[in-house]
Length: 168
Image 1 (spheres, helix red, strand yellow):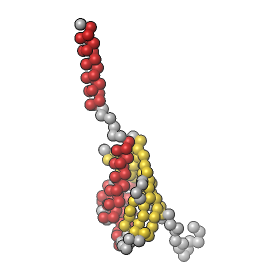
Image 2 (cartoon, helix red, strand yellow; image 1 turned 90 degrees about the vertical axis):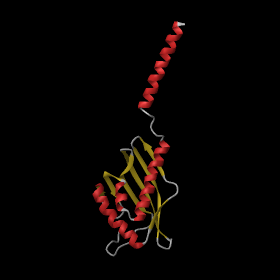
Image 3 (cartoon, rainbow, N blue to C red; image 1 turned 135 degrees about the horizontal axis):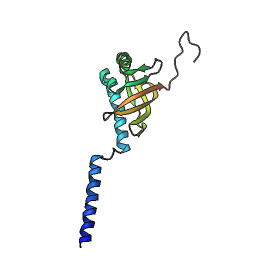
Image 4 (cartoon, rainbow, N blue to C red; image 1 turned 180 degrees about the horizontal axis):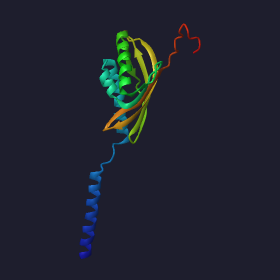
């Protein structure tokens, strides 16, 4: 009987220690939920861009992020990214174009790093598609939130030849 009591006491102690360890170190979110959270940032980007909310748009980027837009120099850091988007968003709003993301983005998450890629389209005021292309972003989780550290996109359309540019 004493041996049984000691065994039960030992098992109970081990279980309590294990439960304390689990409580102190809860399991990480599943990869699927992290990927969904990461892809939700792309939707925030889309809504902020189309709404002309440059401050919200810029807040989605890490302080040390690099934006790699097509036909423009790289923008290093949040301040430069803000300057780029202030001009780009204003031009898009003036032109009356709206961005849309494709229905089937791809992505992955490993620890505090993740990536997303997919397609986009741009429509004019009448709803006519004026551009299609693809994007790729790399993000880092900081203080519980995903932020872009590298972001790029490019058009599938042919680049228009300029008067002084005969090489494409």
